[in-house]
Length: 243
Image (cartoon, rainbow, N blue to C red):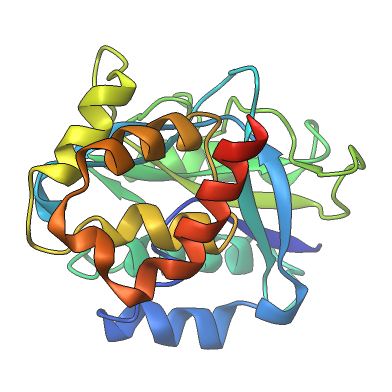
C-alpha cells in the first residue's frame, strides 16, 4: 500500500516546533511531493496565531485551491502501519497529544482510500470510533474524508492507495476576504508569515489574490520584510494578470 499525506499549511514549512521537522524527516519522502487540486479556504480562526485565519479542507468548492501531497517514506503493508502514520501525523499537528490520539476538540485525522471497498476501511472506522475521536467536517463519523480524490494540476489522478490529512474546526460562516486580510493586518506578532509561506510553497486558495489586494492597499508595516519578497512577487504577478 502506498500512502501519502495531504498538507495544506504549516506542517510543510514550520520549523519552530522540532517535532514537526523530525516528523517530516522521518515519515515523509519530501523529494516526491507534488501539488494537487483540492477545495481549500481560509476558514479557521486560530487563537494560537493571533486570531488570524488558517486553511481548512472543504468538501466541495469551485474553483479549487492547491495543496501539497507528500508520499509516506515507507510502504504500508499492515493496517497497524497505516494507523501509526495517522497517529504520527496528529502528533506533528498537535505535539501535546496523548499517545494514540487521532484528534482533539478542534481537529482530527481522517483517511481517504482510492478503493472505497478496501479491507482496511472497517478496521479504520472501528478504531476511529473506539478512540472517541471528535468528528470534524469534512471527516465523517467513520473517520473518512468527504473530499474529492486529489488530482494533479494536469487533471491526472495521483497514484497512491490512501491519503491521510487533518481536518480542523472552521467558522460557522465563511469569513469575507476583508475579514481574512484584516486579521493579518491588525496583528504585529508575525502571524502573516502563514499566508506568505503558503503562497511561496504553492499551497493556495482561490481567494489569495483578492486577500493580497486588500493587504497591499492597507500596507501594514510588516509588508516590507525581505523574507516575503518571493511570495509578494508571485502575488503581484497574479494580480497584474487578473488571476
